[in-house]
Amino acid sequence: MTLRVRVRYISIVRDKVGKDYEEIIFESDQVTLGELLETLDRKYNFSSILGDDLIVLINGKRLDQNEYLPAECSVVIAPPVSGG
Image (cartoon, rainbow, N blue to C red; front, side, top):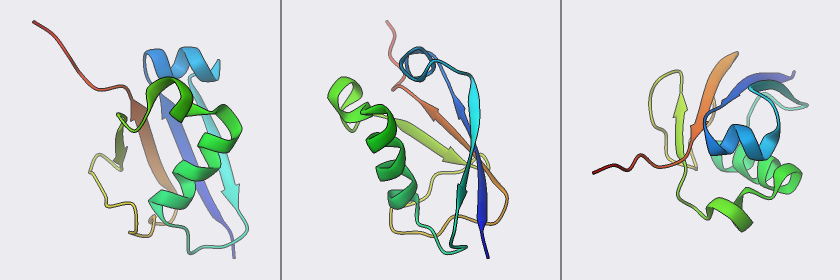
């Protein structure tokens, strides 16, 4: 089975990636959040620009990196929020 993940990029993350969203398809249906982030880091080298300071929501909620992604999930990746 496969896992289809729709990833939406916000703000500086979108600028780095060059698109608003994309669909990632994994050959396994057992993929952790950490595995997704590693895949995206290899593809876009997030860590060199953003470090580990990303906000990642899966279907509107936070998951630990060792938790499995649900089927047909929607992921939002954004930089940390700051303000004054």
